[in-house]
Image (cartoon, rainbow, N blue to C red; front, side, top):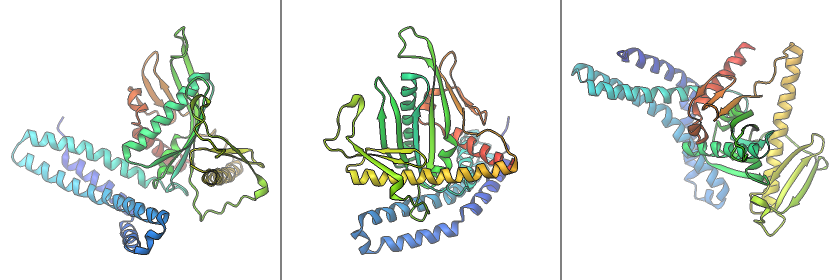
Length: 369
């Protein structure tokens, strides 16, 4: 079936018009100008941490501007390519145009999803915690598979990550792990990954080769900023220090640098052990604890509003995705109905389609409510 290039290109331009409007390119250019001025100040480098924030912010903002303007240039080039192919009746050129159209359509779809991320904290970096659930050693192994999946996803996009805490299981895998994805909109994208994930497979830990179902929970919170108003009284926090350890309990530190911070009123516990000093781990733990309390406060406010409105629907995050390796191969999101038949690709970080579908699904849910 012949491709209607004119209609396809018109649709792409219409979508990009809405992307431009939401992206606010003038604001991006102003931000770039401001950051370039700061970066040119020699005194900036007296504060290495501040200098790194400015230079990385400048790089990210330039990349965000280029994503939009560069995409529009690609659509222009595609239109020229189509005109050449049609004028010269060159099928090879039209085939090339068809391939480029598919690539651009996918990239524009990703940009469009960005326009749907308008929640209060969607622009923030994200802190992700994965916990093994029911299923014994298979669940711990599944938790480690999910950790690798998300780290590979971030690596594919060039997003900086930092593993902040890992608690290893006795036989294999992880009891829990916490990591940070420090780029704008990491929370907006990854927040749709929160919930219960389920794995069905022939257990590699069962000598009888039986099929095993195991579960892992994924929690995603936005990383708080200094402007957020979350103050925690000292008397509400209990801090324990311990020695960091790796798989099997093998010591990886010779000092008690790891920190376990408990918020007494809520029982929320945060552990950090991957920084070099107890002071750094304490600061990281406090920041994550503040983030969790911020989200809990917002969730309580939202629940109260739903109760007043008579909304009794269950949380969308529970039982959100199944990864089936046996008796067939499929990964399916139970909210969006999006599915793929290649679990290996998914576990290797190819989850953009799931994230995009989740963001669109969430926006539809918000509109309906």
